Amino acid sequence: MIIDCHVHVARQLTGFWQPRRYGRVVDEDDEFQAMPPSFDPPASPAELALAYMDWAGVDRAILLQHHLYGDQNEAILDAVNAWPARFSGFAYLGGFDHRDDPDRLEALLRRGMAGLKVELATTRRLRSTFAFDGAAERAVWARLDALSAPLILDINGCTTQDVVAVRHLIEAFDHLRVCICHLAGAERGEGRDGALLGLHPRVWIDLASLQRGDDEYPFPRVQDLISWAVEHIGPDRLMWGTDYPGALNWATYRQWADLVRRHCSFLSEDQRASILGGAAARFLLWQEA
Image (cartoon, rainbow, N blue to C red; front, side):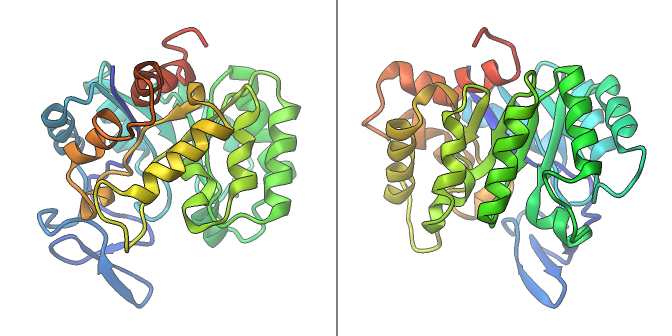
């Protein structure tokens, strides 16, 4: 089984990214190519993601959110309910600025969401006081723990204090499974301390969007990062992902699958199978850990 652990869907962009044409968006005064030109107007319908998955031989995808795309809870729930064998969705809570956030989260989980996704950078753009050890945030983590639902964190750009707070969060809740996105930003030469949170037995690491602008397919620097993660963390909780649709600016969807499926010659077949899908299946409790 091949599982893409990091996919974005959106009927229309409702967050910081304001759509223009041919995959281009504006964020504040900056206009740039967020998606390939074929995404016109810029959006990411679930049906299109499914077509790419079928073309590349990807069995399932985990649908994630942040405020660049905006609140896509309803679009993701529609996708999960329409294709339950293909998609798992993670809920979005915005800036964690509602007193009933734990109840809002539980309602989304009962409607079909698998867990919660939080991206540090966009959450702090919405509420600058967001903190992993804040009282309001802790109430949300406690509800996830009580429901045995997983938490996915994008901590790119985090401080040392953020890493400490995330470590305390993981240790404080015995039933909470956590995934750290993008190898915690290690592609920029930072985030190794965050990535090493993956040494904890309830922490997984996603390997999406590790490329840099001067790297070309099959991304030798990305392969070096994956090799580093296998050596220092181990392959059992490393998850392949793309960051679709933005990842299509760098390579085709099939090439992203082939990066691990055909390249990364340092991987054994068992390691390759774990990274391509086994680890994600264990994270979502489809297979025993």
